[in-house]
Structure formats: C-alpha cells, structure tokens
Length: 354
Ligand code: ATP
Image 1 (cartoon, rainbow, N blue to C red):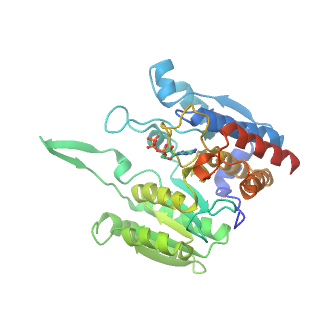
Image 2 (cartoon, protein in one colour):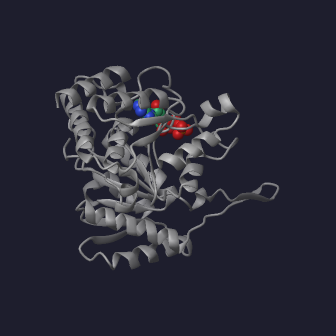
Image 3 (cartoon, protein in one colour):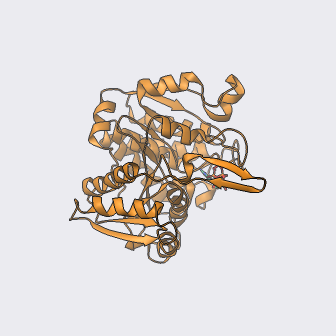
C-alpha cells in the first residue's frame, strides 16, 4: 500500500458497547455476497480471534426462504449483537421492495457511512496519491423514500435535509479527522441550486467546523468536486457528503484506486455498526468464483477496529497489502487471473505468516 491503511475505529460510545460483546450477526447476502463473506470469514479465522457468529438471511435469499427480505430473526439478532458483517443485498431497480440496506441503516440509526479509499501498491491506476475518507450521511436526503405521483406523468421525490442529521454527520466527520490525524474536511454540495436543502447542510457543516480550528474546512460544488477528484485527488482528505452525493462519489473514488472490489465500508451509529463492502451484488459475476474478496476482507478489518482489537485489523490490512504488492495472486478486476478462493488462500497464508 502506498499509505498504510489506518485503523478506522469508531466513536468511543459505540466501541464501548461493542467491545463487551463479540457476538456478531453474519449476513451472507445476495449475488457475490456469500462468496466474499466466506472469504472474510476464512481470513478472520486465520487470525485466531474468536467470534460468535449469528448467521442470518436477508434480501433475496431471505425472501426465497421466508417470504420476506427482512425476517424478524434478522432484526432480533441485530438488536442483540449491535454489530454485523454483511454481504450486499439485492434491491430491484424501479420495482419491488424498498432498499433493505436503507431500511437497516434507518432502523438502527447508522447515520455515518465511512469508506476509506486509497491506492495500493501493486494495483496500477492512472491516479496516484489517493488517500480519501468518504463520510456519507446515511439516513435522509432523497433516500427518505418519499415519492408520489401528483398527476399522471408527474411524480415527486422529496429530498429531506434536517439540521440535526447534518450537524451530527459533520461532527462525525470532524471527529474522525481529529482522531485519525487528517488535515482537512471538504463539504460537497449543490447549494447553488438547492439553496434551502444543501444550504442547510452547508450551514451546519460551517458551524461545526468552528469547533475544529486545527482541521482545514473547505467546500466544493459536487460537479466540480468530481472533476477535481480525478485531476487532483491529493487535494482532498476527508469528504463530507449528503446521502446521494456520497453514494455516487464513493463509487467514483473506488474507480480511482482500482475498483469496487477493493474498497471497504462501515455504517456507524451511536449504538451499533454494520460493516460491508461498497460494492453491490455484482450479478454479472455472481457464482463464478471470480469476485474480488478484498473489499469485504478489509471491511472485516474495520469491524475488528470497532470491536476494540485494531491490532488484529492491522494484521489483516498488512496481509492484504502484501498480497496486492506481490501482484502474483490477483482477481481479474485488478488485472490478475486468480479466483476468489485463490486470493483468499493467499491472504490467509500471509495472515498466518504475519
Ligand atoms: P447492485 O444493484 O447490487 O448494486 P450492480 O451490478 O449495479 O449491483 P455492483 O454490484 O456494485 O453494482 O457492481 C458494479 C460493477 O463492479 C460490476 O461490473 C461488478 O462486476 C463489479 N464488481 C462489484 N463488486 C466486485 C467485486 N467484489 N469483485 C470484482 N468486481 C466487482
């Protein structure tokens, strides 16, 4: 890795709750989910840590078995463990049930989505010096799901932005920057057009920034930010975004460093967290044994940080970095020919050596 992947331990309140409890809900998910979650389990096992897994179905696989994408047993398990390692879940485009990811994030008030995105030695892309932390608000914006037809051929989708949610995500981003020794936070917006909603988001970010004088605060309009992310990614550090911009910009950031197969993620609330890769179900490669397991493996390392064992998380990050750096066992999305299980086995070996 060009830069060491730093521990992404959560805020103190959440960590205290989680540290006392090593029971974790395991959601294999849909599409490539079971393949990459299986890989993460193998790597976690190689570290020797003991976790009591509570395996639960969700999404399409739960729908097929139980007739619902969100079984009560899943919700009960999450209420008990408050920590989950989760594969991607299928959400149909323009039909069917609302996103289960959105439902879980809102049910457990997991308001902060964090996606560390950085270059890896051994993964060549045209973009260098990428070392970004995407902090995405997770509970509102156009994801509020308030849509209706007001007349035939005319629909409305309501964007909800509140001062409470904007302040708390801004505070999260600055706290993250402070604890991880980051230099700047950039609020990304479209307040020139959405003067009220994005205007409120910015106003809250500015007010919060006043309490963090040692961290540089910047603002940028989302379209200009997308161009600058490609031309000068090194000029950004922590990115603070509303829900929809955060979703789009995090895929852009993943593209800078080699793709969705590499970027981990976490959804934090004050009382729990769900760890998952940025990527979706990847239906085009599901079941073929070629998915890159690294995004999910690095998400599991973020989970260990949260559980209060960052040294073990570091071990997984170092093992993963060494396999990428060696460049011999890579999946095809990052230029190799190896299968999911071959990459997993290489990382397991590196963990065992480490
Ligand atoms: P969903 O609707 O579940 O989000 P999607 O196909 O729209 O599915 P992704 O699943 O994120 O979105 O996939 C986008 C692209 O990235 C696909 O071409 C997919 O094959 C690729 N991709 C995603 N995850 C991985 C992975 N772990 N390894 C390799 N390629 C991946």
